[in-house]
Length: 356
Image: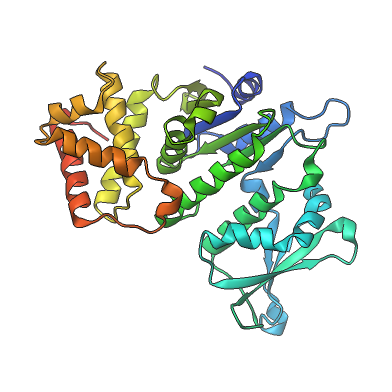
């Protein structure tokens, strides 16, 4: 068992280039990000050694509703911070934010309002409906997506080179996103990894409470078509807390907690909306049960739970879970796919009677 500072030190000492951590909410992910930032500061000048996205990053943005003028000049202000010195990159490359945003199909346009002093970067952002000029206030979910894309673009700033370029620490980028956008966000993180691990010198740490985001990224990094490049660079962990003591374990070592939460997430999806990317979670669940039972084969579990045509079911699950989840976007399952998905999940419940 360890404290947050000790866990942060473990991450600092970890040789993995890509560290993906799953943890329940209220486990301390944001505080872990802060502790990691503190222990990795440059000892000579105290400046951060990396770039961070977390709840504090989102707090740098606040709305000026311009109530005195009936919202005439409503805008999203940016509180000055050490990041402002890198805003010039975004001002010169506004299309980069638009490119990141396009994945989420925004319905609005935006303008970056630069400070009169170039050193102070961007002062605020004004939003409007496409083709209109009147400023608007976007929804909380749209705001979170915009801020996330703002940071995705900022991560690409050349100004980080030699300044804060040792690592990226991304804490829970999907805290307010709906299910439609989870795999899009996973795709954007995977692109970030691809763009920044060309020389394998930078470390990228991602923490999340969302089992879907964790599973999709873990799948692409360790089993996907490009996994040959990333598998040996990737470390997967579950951050757990008990009696205020923390532990960082591999999902295999903490399989009981991990697969129960997978089941809970899948169960909710079957009662609401199923999307093709849920096959990634289903296969992960089957693999965890298989590993727990010492088989290591998904087909064995399908046989054990009573699937009639094991080969056909296995081919379908593998085919759909190996697709590029980033390209699936809003695809719901077909009736046949949904029928198979629900059958397999129900038979898992009937066979093993897991409580979650």
